[in-house]
Length: 248
Image (cartoon, rainbow, N blue to C red; front, side):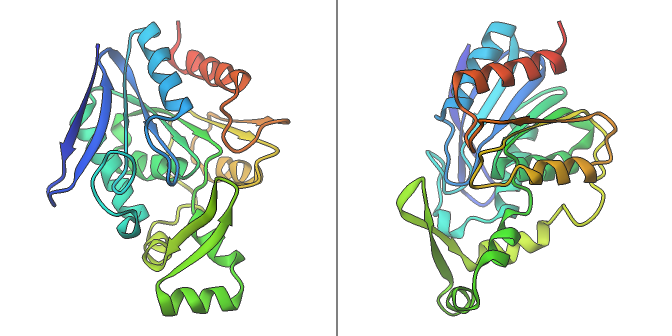
């Protein structure tokens, strides 16, 4: 049986979630930047776990979806804290963390904070360190405007008004970078990435695989895949990945 609720943070903020009871390993979904827990992949995973009898939880980060807060005040560190609080407060036993886009970065930070709780990781177009990659792509005028005004708005195919990125997001992101050195995670990791992803290059998943300490890492490149990887074929591939990690 699934249930919805809000998980209070110590600072008074609330994290909205949906949870499905079941056995472990449980599955926990971490969405992308400006995404919420009602998306295609999150809903598919809940139904998958219901069929398999595994526990599942999905949630909205601070400033996203039904959770409290202003996204302008959100940072990678804050969202990673949300993920760890959900892991601690709403799950039991070992977990498979599934991170989509930015959620792939949050997934790594949560796993590093709770290594003993992690059964496996699945990245879907994982975007570790994306704030720094974005900053590097800005021209000097954009960087100066961001420093002076506190924000920069960039075109996005997902929003006709573009996405606004705030200076604290970049500054805090630098305190949570993971791609410069070996990432001390030894659990199984599966990375799925579309080769037609125009938001996060597929080479990011290859570089991530090279930095992970784990010797059980597989990168699956989808030739016709886009950033979302939400087609019927993509979801079937995700299910097959989980079948392998969960076993019969």
